[in-house]
Length: 393
Ligand SMILES: *Cc1c(COP(=O)(O)O)cnc(C)c1O
Image 1 (cartoon, rainbow, N blue to C red):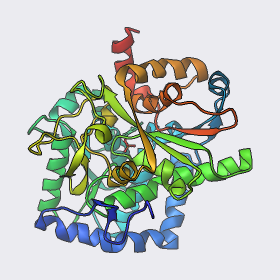
Image 2: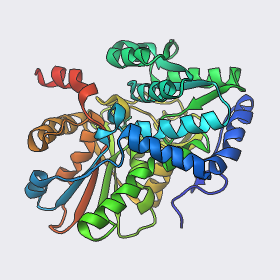
Image 3: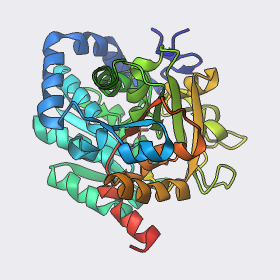
Image 4: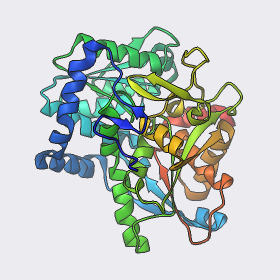
């Protein structure tokens, strides 16, 4: 069994491309070209050079000594927090902007929730001198003012989505509407392993540099490529997909996916999609989705804006259903406590999303010789206000 996408765009029963007819030419153009273009040597050279010189890759694989001592196991942190713009998201936007250029696109659109993907998109558009329009829910624009300012400084136009709950889901709908109306010159950069095929596979491939580097770095540090555990938080699932990618078929590597339980899985205020979701279609993909009995999407909740999504990418839905990955949900309170703990123990202030992944250390038992790799997907600068309000700092 393969845990990767098949030629029809499915991971097991999940994935596919459920799109309105008017979007078909755009998605089909991408599907026919993405593997061909990304396999070209000039593409790979430019992608690798930008990851190195602009993003700052390879990111270190840091042995967390104090944490390892406390938990009596070997804990390594993959330092995606050191990427330019503060998280893994830029790995994907660099890849997609290079693809957009080769497809002759002049105008870039994106959706954003907390603003991190919007900032990563605005950054690469500035880098390439391309027009950038970012759709963002009106509520999120108010909540995430510093990221709105960043996008504006980078030359992007931020357009408010005023329908529905005025958050990420509505911003995505607006971006799709824009794409339908501008099919020829516009490229839509999606920010996670979600959306219609080929997006989940394409984004996973761009993020797979994370596990490629982990293998090389572990070989150097431990004399073997495979850890015993890889752990990552899952919103849409892109940092996790990148962390797992080259380990999917390595049976001895245990894959741990961490979801946001919010106030608790059964509290009604949660974003634990695998625990609460049922099969449905969201944003062009068949996947697990939080919904009411009659199929209305349920509003998700997490203190971390990056995990606050009612669905999950089709790769992860399949990893859950097949049992290849173990899913664990972590509450706001557990994650926030880890924000402080990691800061005090290792001098690393994590993004609240990433802090969820660390709480697994309190939920699972590891052996002394186990090699445990946790993906530190981003740094906590963007979350300072949330930390200040929560802890009255
Ligand atoms: C956006 C974000 C996430 C969640 O998105 P994924 O696609 O699930 O990776 C996680 N961590 C950080 C730091 C983020 O900015």
